[in-house]
Length: 354
Image (cartoon, rainbow, N blue to C red):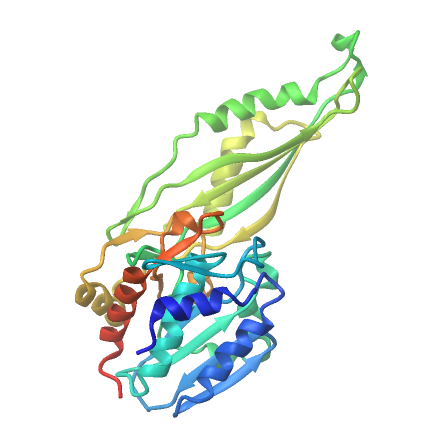
């Protein structure tokens, strides 16, 4: 078996900031085309490799090839049993595990679809999975999906939904020397800000996974000039909601929280939404993954592409090597033992290969 740490370093040393994934995809494609029994299809900068063994179930193993911007010139550095470099944890360590499994296990116990997709780290409408869905949707078919996002080799099941609202509060302009002649829109935001600061979040438990909701103001903008009472202020509010709620239920909840502070001339607009996904841990393949691997299971408090697969009827979880708290940091790194532990767990799930 190829040394997984060395393979990770090789992938890290090929820059692949979002929209610039072609070179690393070419490297992965060249490796997979030598594997017997795999059909390989390229859709833009997305690569899909599939077995066709006639098994009763098909497992999708997916990972994104792009990284956030950073120090691409430095490449990878191996120190003792650690690979250091941009994208090592998120998620070229996971890609290395996927690539080596595809090369070494040519007759898995289930049919496998390996998806290496582009542009996960940018706006959702640019995600490579949507490109594949549009041009070759049959390539995404399967019974269950595992995303190789960094989870410290634990199962992070499902994911929370996320939505952003633009809230516009209105006022009346006046000279700052005569503020009583106007209505200060920025001051009007004070009550709303206090209410959100005191927001009582829910912590529902689903399939043994405890989610924790959140409501936060992430941007505020207003003001005209140093001597003008502002007549407008805009806030961007982000809500993370548990998968026991639908989009409509979550939106209604946020509007109810905001309603005491919204008056005539004000506006609340939902500007962005990505759906939640249930844990789906009752699927036999995922049950076996957890039990055979003796894995810790927790809720995914952020959003990942498990929601993409769950929305298409495929239970999905996050499971990959690497510490997620190191993703996107200047000190991003991954350890050999994490790579090997993840590889061994997935190899047991796939069964003995030849």
